[in-house]
Image 1: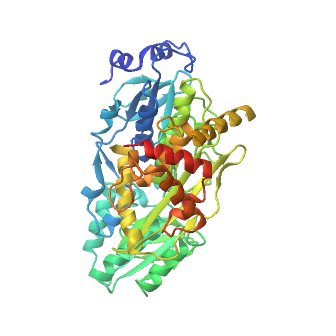
Image 2: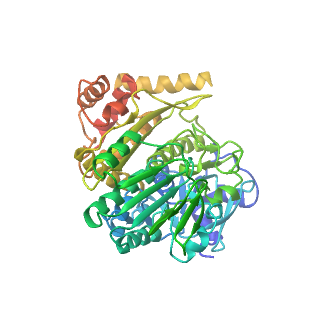
Length: 421
Length: 100
């Protein structure tokens, strides 16, 4: 119990006192300082907390995050390919308190949407006027038979959340002999980072080309075709790594054996020296606790796209990979969801109407080698009744370039700064 | 809903016409913050992507219109510029010009 009730009341004022006693307040008209609790300090949550404070200086913001440091999924493929180190993608949260954000290192274990409280593993109960959930994905390791055992033994990783598995996959690739086979297996969309598998293949191929040129790569794709930036990646595989990459569509992972080092799909049994299996995913666990993992499969969260508020649970907003949307699950979009959501919450807490026509954009760079990258970019305009509508001229580059590689490097620094500086 | 939309448009078109720096409405601040995801928070970029803070408004507006029409070549900007209106270019231009 690190955050006691007195500390909390100090932060959140009378609005919280009312919530604790079960007396609902009309936050839009309350003279008290409203309190927004943000769960998860990734791209979505950290950015939302910052912009809430920037645009709503009268709002108290508590940001709950269990990890000590921010480890970026974007550029984590560069670590796997040996272009960067874990240090390069690991960043501190030290600057966030300077924005007046109260950081709480803890893990949310329960949400009471009626009483507007969250409970943490550390024993704190924290009240909110508005709750923002940005937990990222939960990886459904049970959906691939044998994965949990192979993962626990350190033999097979997904490396689909940046962290220790990123470093372990890099070590496995370094230890693999020249002439070995790297097998990657990915699920049907939707999953986090649509171009991620294909960028990973490019950067592992880039490493093999330099260090282990007799090696092979097999991509077992659960999708019927390359999901994102197909011309870009196909061009890279054909021109930069001819004969090295074998692409097999309609091959979602069913089972993996970490002792025999075999991946089984509906059509194939494939043996490899390094196996990288990415199971299916769903919205983070806290979304289930809040009752907002509410699409027909109970997998993702449906939101009002003008405010990112849950369509079923009032005062709970969801950002990033956890939402059901005809948009890519990208860190860039999570960052931009966060800004639209922060703006909407500032307006709602002030008793004003949120912007009825928000606009968001996605920009996603993927490296195709150690010196070249391509991108995909779209602008989406919100239209009532339709959600976000992709605007004309959005799309992807067909070929990587060195100039775009320098922009990808700059983009990463800037999006990290958006969330953390 | 109709009333809300009308008011919001009135707010941001009004700003666009008068070009009042530092008084940007929430729509303008939000779309400008979307630019900042690549161009750096506060419009201050790290690395190869240009900064936007303090750009002259006319230069910003002309650049965006030229990216949109194709008159100015670039890598990614035509795809972004095509998603915004001239009034939004004016409003964002005034906002970025106001940033130090």
